[in-house]
Length: 572
Ligand code: WT7
Image (tube, rainbow, N blue to C red; front, side, top):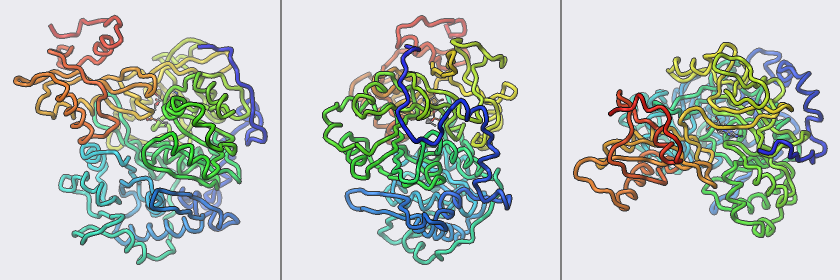
C-alpha cells in the first residue's frame, strides 16, 4: 500500500469542520439532548425517525421516493407517520406485543418501510429477511428467534416453512390475491381497517428493536440484537459521515435485510430528516445511473463491488447521465481498492469515502470524513466518541504498522447487546477486558489511519455479503451426491471473494459439469443465491483433522498455492 498518497479535502460546508478538534471534544451525552427522552426517560426510535418530523416544519417534506415499472410513489413524513401508525395498530390487533419478534420478508418496496417502522413503534423486535433467502435460511432465523408474526408476499410465503415454526401465528400478505387461509391477513384490508393514530409504545433505551442475523465461521447464523439506544449513533454518523443536510437526496443501495439497509437505509437518514430514495431489484449499471439522475441524488452510500462493476461498465456510460447533483459518495462492506477511489475521482469528480463497521457494531466506527484527507486504501479514522486500536491477543496495544486485532473500546451507543440465545458466542467478542474484538486484522499508520488486512476467521465476504462457510457446507451435504464438503472464499477481482466448494462424492456418483450445475442450483434454491458456490471442485478426499473437522485452512492453501502450514492434526 502507498501510505503517502493523499486526496485533499474537496467538500465545502460540511457538518464537521475539523476532525481532530471534534474528536478531542466530543461527548455522546451531547447527542442525547437531541431526543425526546432527554425529558421523559422513555423513547422510541421510530418516533424520532418519523413522527418527530411529521409534527414539525418537515411534515410535508418528501421522506421516501420509490419507483418500479408498475409503481411511482412518494411519501411525506406525515404520510410515513400515518402508514406506520396504521401498521402498528394492525400488529397490535393481532396481539403482537412489546419484545415479540416480528419478521419482515418483503422485496424492497414502501410496505417494507411501513412495517419495519410500525412494528418498532409498538416495541416489537424486527427481524428483516433479505428477499433472496430461501427456505433453509428463513427457517433458521425465524426458528431461532421464535417469531410470532411475519409480513411477506404470496410468492415469498412459499419459502417460509410454516409447519416447522410452531411459534409463528400470524402471516400478513402484501398483494394477496386468493382467499386467505386461517392465520393469514391481507395487508391492504388490515391497513384500511386500522386506526390512523397509534398510541406509541414508549420503551427504554436498552429495549430491543432489531435482530439482524449474520454469519460466523461455525454454527448457524447468529442473531445480533440492537436496541433503541443505537439511534444516538445512527443520528450522529448520519450527520458527520453521511454529512446529511436539509436539501439532500440520499440513496443507500443496501437492502434492509442487511444491517447497512436499516442503520443507514432507514435510521441515520430519517433521524436527520433527510429524503431517501429506495430502489430494489438487481444491480444494473444503467438502472443505477438512471436512479442517480432521475432523483438528483446528492449523497450515495454503496459498496466496493458495485463501484467495481460500474468501473467495468466504463466511463462513457457514466458520462451519458447527469450526475451533477452528486456531492458525497461513500462505501462499506469490503476493502475499497485505491484504483476504484482514483477512478471515482476521475469519472465522478468525487472522492469515495470508505467506512468500516460490522453487523455487530450497529453503526460506523471508522471512516473518512468530508473535511479530512483520504489515503486511498485506508478505511480512515475512528468516529468521534470511538476509540479504535490494534491489539495483540492479550489486549496490549501495538505500535503503528504492526498488524493485529482491530479492536474497539467498549461500549458505544449502537453496540450489539446480545446474540439471541447464545451467550458464549456473544462473550467471545469481549474476551479481552474492555475491548470488542472485531475478528478483522488491520494496522494503523503514524497519522492514525487504519488499514484493513483481512479476517481472522473463515467468514467469506462476497460482493460485501457475509457468507458463513458452515451454512453452505451443511446445505451441500444434504445433496444426495455429496459425501463431504469444505467451503472457502477465493479472491476475485470484482466480487472481492467468491464462494468456492470442495466436495467429495458418494459411491455411485461421478464428477461432471452437469452435477456441478445441479449442486449450484441446489444451494441457490435451498439457501440463497449469494451463498451458492460459483466454483466447485471434486476431490477424492478432503483434508480433515483427526476429530473429523474439515480443514478449510488447507483448502485455502491448495487454492492459493500457499504452504499448508502445520498438518500435525490432520488425519492419516
Ligand atoms: C465485515 C462485516 C456493516 C457493514 C456491511 C458489512 C468487512 C466492512 C469494510 C471496509 C474492509 C470491510 C469486514 C467486517 N468490512 N467494511 N471498509 N473495508 N472490510 O457488514 O456483513 O457484518 O460484515 O465486512 O471484514 O468484519 P457485515
